[in-house]
Image 1 (cartoon, rainbow, N blue to C red):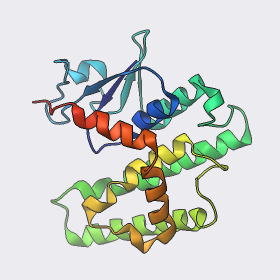
Image 2 (image 1 turned 90 degrees about the horizontal axis):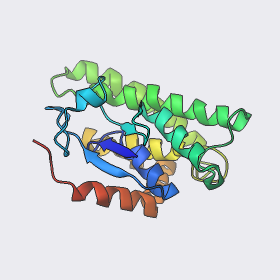
Image 3 (image 1 turned 135 degrees about the vertical axis):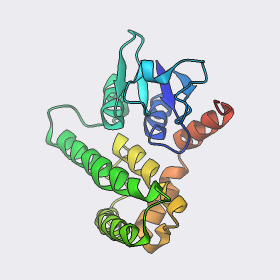
Image 4 (image 1 turned 30 degrees about the vertical axis):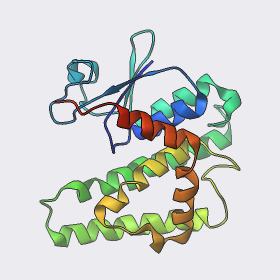
Length: 205
């Protein structure tokens, strides 16, 4: 398999999952502006959507969209318990969290990347995002992980998008349970290994 990634993007989530599962994979870096890869390819020919993550399977098929990719990977090694079994209520709860993260935290933080946005608009977006973080705080106050008693693909995704908050000058210490959660997940060997591997690949022009 090949994982196409760019630093500081949502592609870190499936990368963490690959490390958790110990599956073999090739890591290919993408320049989000030029759409060139570290292998010299046109990324748009691989994923016409133009953004990471993309996972190329050994069959040549390409999967896109982080929540779909991480569930696919988890189902390759069900004994690792990174996702409940398909068809169970627990799996639906996992999907519920994945959808919440992608629509309310990932997409909800996207306007904050736009440095040209007016401050009046940014205040509205921050307030909405803070309400979503309040919801997560309540849920993590009584548990270590989002779903069940152990780490799942939902945690890989949430850790990834919450990692962007520092760049928005949002101090997660405002939410003590979230702050502890970030320390807990960030200390995992899979997270450290994924970040180290990504740092080894030089930028693409």
